[in-house]
Image (cartoon, rainbow, N blue to C red):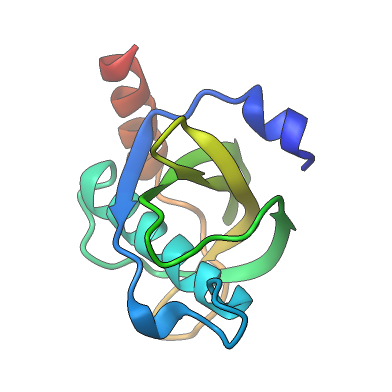
Length: 142
């Protein structure tokens, strides 16, 4: 997804992220691999708040990240989260990291998440309760 496409989205869920000194690389900005940790925190916050789940039976099957600009230690940021498509055993999530001063987009992450059965580790249908919980959350915010 391009920067312009991400900026056209309405995100109703957000998780504040604290940048740590150990997140930096030798160039003084946040290491590229750390961004996915931030996305994991955003997704887990989404599961906890919106789906009322502490953990999920889901795995990330695909990730596509668009880097817009670097982050630094003193930046104040949040991860915004949104389900953009439901499938039978998967759903697509759009996540974006924004600087909170001026709400500028830093980077965006599009991922396909697959719901799996814990015992046999095979794809399983996404629970209807999850879809209903997301719709209820969105309707309560709007």
